[in-house]
Length: 390
Ligand SMILES: Cc1cc2nc3c(=O)[nH]c(=O)nc-3n(C[C@H](O)[C@H](O)[C@H](O)COP(=O)(O)O)c2cc1C
Ligand SMILES: [Fe+2]
Ligand SMILES: [Fe+2]
Image 1: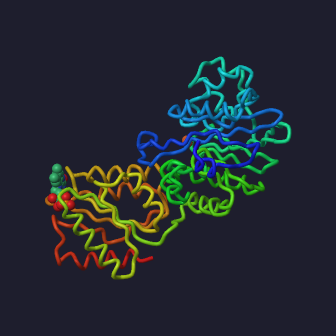
Image 2: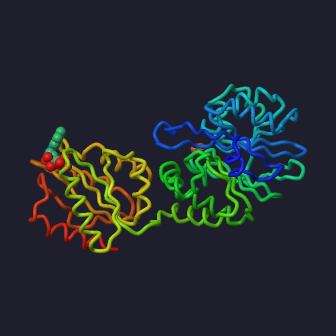
């Protein structure tokens, strides 16, 4: 473990970091481009020892070395399973095999998944905990708090009462290896909106429960441990999970086959900027869709621009709208621009997506370009610019 990893995950002499900083990972969950990620696991040393989650299979070797260094000959009494997704749960079987007397602790839903992912005899060693149930390790006391759908249904978080540490599962996590030493906020919105974004209501429910706790440290399953920035990360999550835009400006993703839609968008962006707007354009044929999902959630207004393709939305734009639909996108003003040479139909199809989302206001006019933008289109663009004002 490098000094940087130690520095960014340090909690105390008794609550130790055992995770794996996966600096080599390029794609997380088979779809999100990232410069590494960490799978965090912690060990609480006390009369009885608890291990908090395990790590992804990519980190098995390093993980067991870390555990050996922390535990020596001592044996953990408990493995607390907060989340059964394989990026944290992959090594449950191996750890349980190594310590046959270790009990597994988790929600009832996690118990069912343990049998799905591993040998069924682990069931006999599984203790399902209830909301606010406590477990004393000696000096440290664990309090279990259910957080269903803060990524998966079996998720719970754990509050350690003595050192006031909230083990927060995927909540407050981020992409990026610890070694990169990026500020949390740099990657956290990319992580949040793509991984947890759909579950705003459930994150709000967790924040409400957490507001009753005195929290000195937040220890998530990915990214750095939070100590001095707790108010900032909690306030940020409060805003994001209520679907309030974090930034003022117009995000304008575009999908262009031969470049004519792109030219129209870039010209319009310049005109909007001359009116004093902040504009962020994104070529969906070049950027990953998860980057566009993040920006769409961050900004207060979005203009979608797409060429028509076989009477449909050009696929990269269709993909973005599909992602926004499944991620519960809502509460935004949007504009639409389509391009077509004989039967423009992208706008109608984009509208169908957006009309089925909650609290989406579609600004008029919806603009149709016929192959290229002409001076005769200027009035329409001016009218859309007016309609998109805050
Ligand atoms: C494979 C393909 C399918 C297309 N399908 C349609 C269509 O169904 N209806 C239409 O009006 N235009 C269609 N077009 C034309 C484009 O939408 C039109 O030329 C547009 O100006 C392209 O803008 P761009 O330069 O930004 O790609 C199609 C173009 C291609 C290459
Ligand atoms: Fe997860
Ligand atoms: Fe995770």
